[in-house]
Length: 412
Image: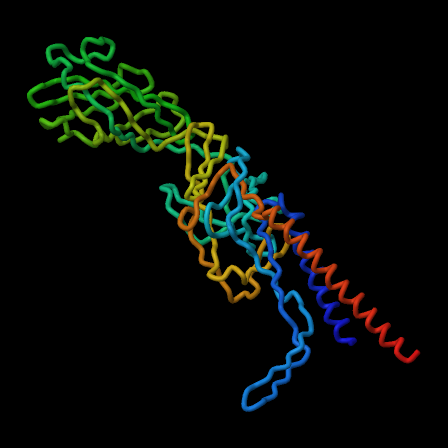
């Protein structure tokens, strides 16, 4: 008789724990990156006896009730909320962001609410540093995984080359100007002129003026005269470009131009003018060049691409790839335990994640946050079910009490 009291009592405890799980899910319906939990019930066995009759087993099993043996996380994708903050990020697919605390512990999270601190470190709302790879000057990942830092300024860089890029073009229909000697002050002695800005080691801008003169239509030849900083009295470089019958460059590139600065602020600059990307076809003149120098720039904006590359834009017009986010995943995500504040840790240090760059197993959605995946309708249904189950177990205890009272009344 007393066993049934304890059996019903285990039911009360189990349903109470289930209600705790349900209420936790409902309470976290607006928690960014939250993954709902589900209670797993296990039955208890009070006694088990097996007898045989005519060689056949007869089982007598009396259960001892129930308990919540485990909780299982639902790692399904949550919906995305648009925030328009480029440092708010959501993972579209598998994996976790990696953040590192000041005591050296690496945590895993689906909450991508990040920001830059005063030092340019990318951190989460708890001040933990987001992990990834820093990129070198050509955009390759360098070194091991570490904290991501976005420089607040870009230092000046001296120009070493100027490259002509497609669709740069010299118009093959331009008239040949071989009769008169070239004079930069006389526009009738050249066909086309364009300028490009270059920088010295202090970040001072300087102008290179390139004059193009069509000298021979048969050999598709052009003379190039280079002047600096508006000084048309001193030529700082020259070359001759030749093109084949299909308009491809066949000679004259590259040429090295030594630019003597008029202000004497720095030493002379040696700039390589590279015309490999230029063509000569029957089309308008187009001048499109890139160069590797820049003035000092201050951080203006940060953006994040789908493959987790963090780009910084500076006031000098330069955009630089700074770092790439690291994304971790686990073969068995159930080894992860909640540590509060959106964070997870493996329940054993021997379990190491598979780490890969962003964009490999999941896309990075910048300007968005992944909301909780709690289904309110399902949780309300579970809430009603748990409430009824609790009431039923309480009714069992009431019934047991009535039966026990009747038993006590037998001796009256």
